[in-house]
Length: 228
Image (cartoon, rainbow, N blue to C red; front, side, top):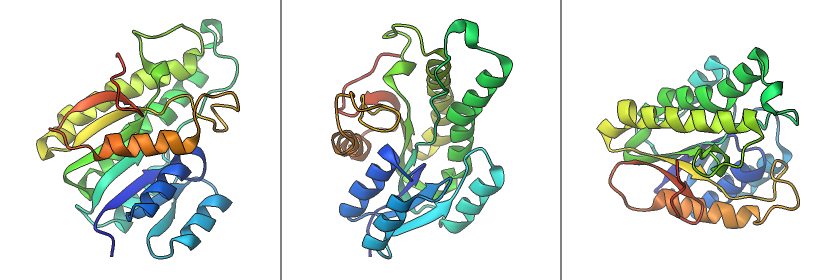
């Protein structure tokens, strides 16, 4: 029986799938969610029968989050990683921003992941860790501008993650880590990205597993601090 348990929200492909693969290989029991059927995740669960559990979940649907919460015992998660997100399309200049596309990406990338983390907070053990999949593109200090929808959503997620820590996690010694995965060769990152999924995921797990006092920090996959 696994002595550590993790839950990865958004695990059907890319970084989420990579996290499930590495954690299962390291001996974790893993709850993995998918919005739509993922062949690779199904195959991975078959390879790790009994230790990888697949749940259907759209992070923007409260009933899905409640169903997942019912399926996971209280206090059982050592690690919870919120990895849902969308890029927001190609039209992201300041002139392209409107009420609809701003509201959609903020809810999907910032508000709903943090609300889901709150709904699942009782499942995380005291002293555990919550990883919020952010991006260096959410850094104001290190911004070249452009891609405004995506940047806006990650800046917002970082702020809400701080509130998640201060108002919900800190009292139980749970750390909240906003993660920059690097520029990774995924569907979103593209083929010209600098690192592969295995490099990013292995590094992020090391960051999340590190011994620390309860805190909220913005860290890259290699453990370096990302400026807010």
